[in-house]
Length: 311
Image (cartoon, rainbow, N blue to C red):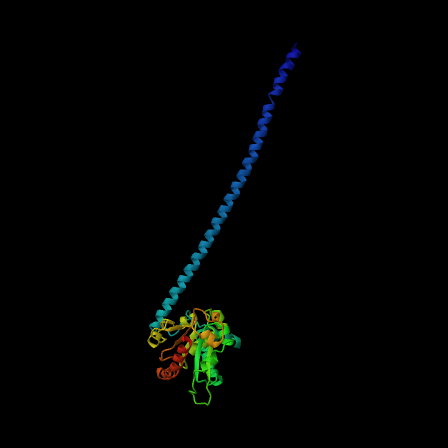
């Protein structure tokens, strides 16, 4: 019985040791996490202290640099005062700064010249082109008795018609060279800047409009854009009162005999095509007096044309 009681007491003592083992494991786990956190906190604190120390050093360095700069400025100010008042003749601390001369190559000088003068060069180039065109035009152009400006794009009317011959039939030998000859200067102005520039239309249009050699105009809506609203055309209602084809300064060619007279289908001469005559006035390349002489000569031809095509 004694042994049995002894064994019964021993069992609880053995079981009572198990919770102590679990507590020991729990304490060990807690210790590991705590130690890790403490080490991390320590590392963070050391990093923070290191950054603070670095920032203090940088601030001190900037402070010293600023103090040195201020000190140098003060010394230079005092030196300038001494120089100004003649206390000293030259300064050892202030030195005149001279810009180092940039040496350019020949190609660099050329590029530099064009860069700084591009606007004047552009204007000069345009002026030179117009001047060259005028000279070539004067030297190579024929000497007709009269000139008609055809402003507007119409290849058929210009190339496949008898327009020049028809106008010549109303001319006289105005220049006394022994023959009768009229000329039609075709300017296919479209209003498309890129297209007109590529075809040299802008320069030709400017030259002819600013000269007084041609007063009769055959044109479409683009010619109306050039002259319309500028008071450059004669009011035809004063020359042809009651003419049903007259619209202000324009004699509209639709429903007239014009297409038949020049040998093209009526569809070639659309609704927008008209005849007009310019007023004598001072222009860039002529005087009003010279243009008046051309007008007095050509207006008779113009009136004959209108009478013929209007029946």
